[in-house]
Image 1 (tube, rainbow, N blue to C red):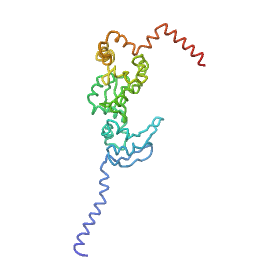
Image 2: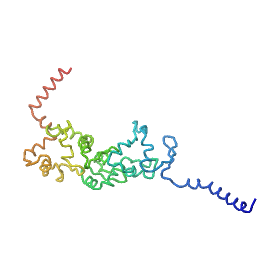
Image 3: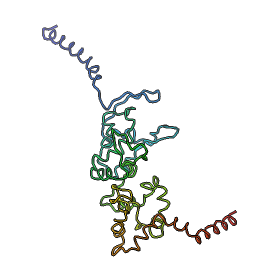
Image 4: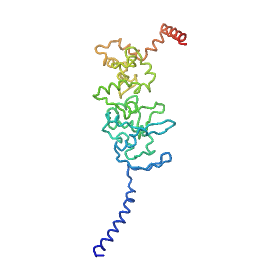
Length: 294
């Protein structure tokens, strides 16, 4: 063996020994894309190709991604085409799911992930968030938890009204505006069922329920993010503001008759029920229906 070979041999052995310890050394590095979790007794250990949207869709692009929660099956599938068709096509998943940015695959650390995502809109839509925060739907958001007054109703967050991955584009998009206009039940009605049912006057509510595109949706009269109780002088339906609110559609002079009719928009059925003749007609109609409906 030559002198050169004798010199190289110890060096090569040293390199082999060092390389043997490299994987162990790197294993100690906490890679946010890799996590070992126990899910229903199964060890889940894999590495995401990226922490961006493409990485999330490795799992969430599967239509069969479901889980049993509280005796019901919940789907965690995300339709990539639906997402890309909306206004947030260029937003990475962690832009809304901010608590998942460094915990993927997800652990139980993100207990309140739904509320975190639904309130993350404020990070980009600050003007809308300020308006919302001043209105009747306001609620203090503390670390993703919704905090309301002890006797207050559970306040809605952005995603409760606008949706999640299926948010439609509204700004400068007539088609999206029409879709939003027709979705009054989802946006308002499911929480305000009494008002939804009583919104049935002939010129406004009945036309809206039948799908008339020019009939006002709830927010056309009550406001969008800055909704106030009708007793609040800032409310669009406060008596001091009714003329301006009605005048937005009824161009020209809004006379006293318009303002008197405004009381019937949600109160027409109550007025009719108080009318003795109407009550008599209703009773006769019910009796006839009961006889011939058998």
